[in-house]
Amino acid sequence: MPRVLWLLIIATTINITGASFLWPLNAIIMNQELGESLTAAGFVLMLNAGAGVIGSLVGGRLFDGFGAYRTIVFGASLSALSSILLAMFFQTYQLYALFLMGMGFGSGMMAPSVYALAGSVWPDGGRKPFNAIYVAQNIGVSLGTALIGVVTAVRLTDVFIANAGVHIGLLLFIVVSFRGMRGSNGRTAEVGIGGVRIPLRQHYRMQALLLVSIVFLISWIGYTQWQANVSVYSQSLGISLQQYSLLWTMNGLMIVFAQPAIYWVIKKWSLTLKGQMTVGVIIFALSFGVLMQAEVFAMFFAAMLILTVGEMFVWPAVPTIASSLAPSGKEGAYQGIVNSVATGGRMVGPLLGGFLVDTFSMQILLTVVIGMLVLSLPIVRLYDRPLAKIQEENKAKQA
Image 1 (cartoon, rainbow, N blue to C red):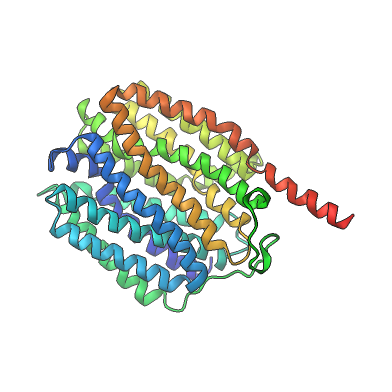
Image 2 (cartoon, rainbow, N blue to C red):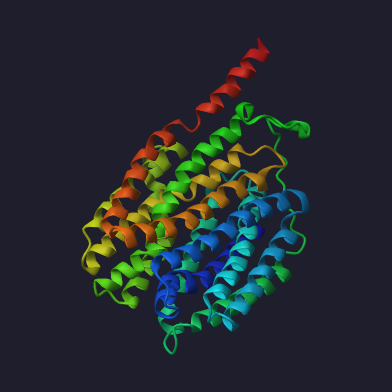
C-alpha cells in the first residue's frame, strides 16, 4: 500500500477511537445524567448527524477545490475545539447538543476527503483502499469500546475528557503528517467534461449513485439502532454496560481479523459489488430477526455477530461504487454524497427508533427495520440500470 494510505489508516483509527468513547454511551448519558427521554437522546444524535451531513457535502466540495490537507485540517480543528468545549460544558442539554453538532460537522468534513484521497493514491486498488479505511475504522471501534470500562471507572462523564484528548492528538498528527497531500488520480470523466452542467435525468452516474444511496441510508437507519436504542433496551433486560461494550469490541475485532474469510467468500462466489451489497442487506435483515428474540446476552452476541458479517459486505462496497462512478475532478463530491447519506442514516435512525420504542415497543421498531431492509433489495439489484444508457448512447454515437 502507498505510504499516504498508511497515514490515512492511522488517522482514521485515532479518530474513531475517540468517537467510540462517546457514541455507545450517548443514550445512557442523556437518560441517566441529563434526565432526558430516548426520543430526546435520538434528537441530539439527529442534530449531530445532520451537522455531519452538511459537513460531508462541504468537505467533498472543498477536497475537489482546495485539496486534502486544508480540508482535513479544518475539519480536525473544528472537531478538536468542539470536543474540548464539550468536556468543559456538557451539563446542559442545549450545550451538549451544540458541541456534538460541532464535532459532527468537523468529522463530516474529514470523511469524504479521507475516502477520496484513499482512492486517488491507489487508483488501481479497486475496493482495497476503501476496505483498508473500513478496517481502520473498526480497529478504532475495538480500541475505543474496549477502553470504555477503564475511562468510566471513576465517572461516566470522563468519556468527554478522553474524547477531547484523542481529538487533540489527531489534529497534531494530521498537521505534521499530512502536509503536502493533494489528492487527484487524473481519471477522464465520461460525463460532465468541461464543467458542463447535466440535468439529473441525463446524469446516469449520479442516478446510479442515488439508488445505491437509498439502500445505504436504509442500512444505516437499521444499524444505528444498536448504537442508540439497543443499549438502553439491553440494560432493561439486565445486561451490563461492560457486556454491551464487549459486543462492540467483538464487532471491531471480527472486522479486523475476519477479512481473509470475507475476501475468500467474495472470490469463491465471484461476487460483484452488486452481489456483495445484496448478500450484506439480507444478512442485516437476518440479524434483526435474531435480535427480536434476544432476551439474554448470548442472543445479543449472536445478533451482533450476524450484523457484523453483513456490514463487512455492505460498508466497503458503497465508497468503492462511488469511486468507480465519479467523473474526474468529482471524486470528493461523490464521496461526500455517500458519506452524507451514511450520516443521514445516523441522523434519522436514532430519532425514528426512539419514537417507535417510546410510542410502541422495541419489537415494532425491529419489525419496521426488517421490512425496510427487505424492500431495499430490488433497488440493490437495479441500481446500475442507468449505466446501461451510457453504453447505448456511446453505441449510437459510433453508429
